[in-house]
Image: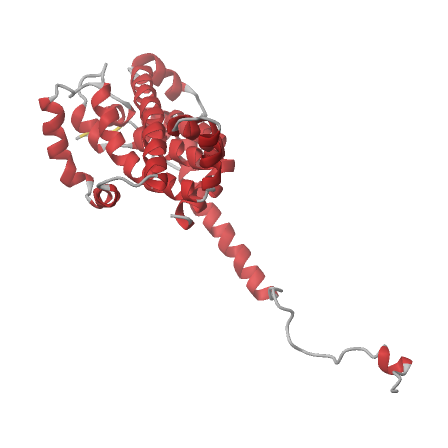
Length: 294
């Protein structure tokens, strides 16, 4: 029988000069941090420029004298002397309705395609995909003609329907991928308990789909809140304009009113930021689930 001596048993492993796996070299760490700092500056600089410009008098609007004669006059003039609050209300109405209706249609469509077999299913999915390939410039004329024939020009409902044609196809595909990741046994347990297919969807599946719902709501809201082409083409008159069309009032052939425009830009960004903060904890989970499991 062989015995192991204490010296052999506790012998140290042979030394090696190989780098430890996963450890970043000092040069790579410096390069990474420099890249992140530069990217952060590039991302923040335009926003900071707009914010500081909104706090300057008109005579300094195009200069770099950001902290000279700082004033809130641009904000007070915007709210007092322009229909900005009317435009803001119109945009909030259109974006809110687009978000609510878009979430409902996208979720129900995604669930139906994920769970049921029906004639035309493959064609429906291809249709949803193909509609994303057409640019706005191609679609704006036929959609304008359709809205005109339905009497929906210069109506908030017309804009809502138009924005749904943009948001729903993408969101339905994403929700389908998310529902594919939810076990079908949950649906079967709902059927055993006597729930209808819609009852199963509403009471059991939808609460599990919060990340996907958050992404759908965020995308639908941003689509309606920041869209310019359709809003400018379909809406006329100060009382009907949304923010996208209203901001164009500050630009004419002779120049631009940078003070009111930048002040309006700051106020416009607030609702979008609030929606993002509300949905941010679900965004990564929802987008990765919809992309990977689809």
